Amino acid sequence: MDEASPRAFRPDDEISKSELDGYWVRFTALRDPETRNTLVINYMPLVRMLAERLRADLPRTVELEDLVSSGTFGLLNAIDSFDINLGVKFETYATQRVRGAMIDELRNLDWAPRVLRMKAHRLANSIQVLQVEHGRPPTDAELAEHSGLDVRKLNAIRRQTINPGSVSLTASYSSGRDGGNVRRIDIIQDVRTPDPFRTLHRKEIQQTLLDTIESLPRQERLTIILYYFEQLTMKQIGKVLDVSESRVCQMHADIILRLQRRLRRWKEELLEPQRY
Image (tube, rainbow, N blue to C red; front, top):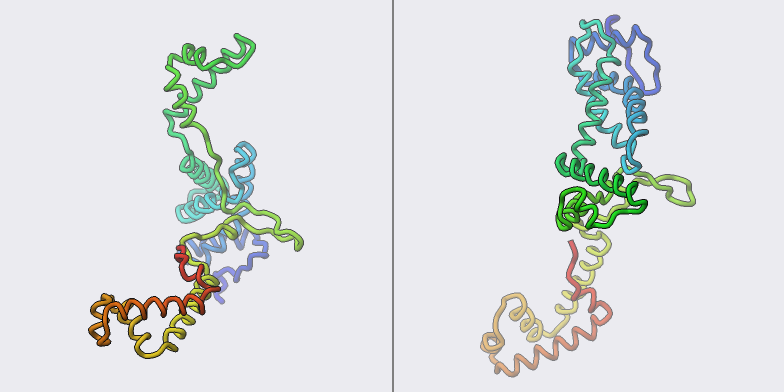
């Protein structure tokens, strides 16, 4: 290995200042992904520290890992744009970008537009003033008069500013006896994807139905095929089999009755539509 090139880095390694400078020189010259990843791993404790500080002033619904995730994008941006010739410590340069990325993500997740937040803030102030004045929570009529709004608009603001609560998919929960944790994203049902067990079971039932049809006498099997697969009418099937239409109807009824008896235990599963 070239003496100018830094050694291979492992996540549990501690990088000295001289080695870190070497990584920065190499990345500035080559912009290679491997050195970039090494720098990211080295500065991830900075991201987590900033996330923990920001998280302390936020509602409980905001997850630490969500802040770390958005802060990582800020770190990547800082690494890509940092100039080692500026004479500034990278930590100082990156802090604003990492924190800014976290705050931008919080703004993107904000459920209320700015104008609505201002109205809600004025409404909260009115409630506080009236509560102090009357020694009790104000009525809707009192609040409407004080805020200069009618009751209908007052209720509209209330409905629009009710936060249903953010839910983080990375939130972890105890899995029980083994003491391990599972994330919410790992246990949410994907209703768009068919249940593999149910799909396999339906295929087995369908194959059993086909085998049962194959075991029918030739004329009866042909009746089923012409009616259900070829979409022929009873009259047309009668012409093919050279029998009367009423005879075809009778055969069809007898066949269905026998099939139902054979497949009774799977009847509900056969008739139930598959969910996606």
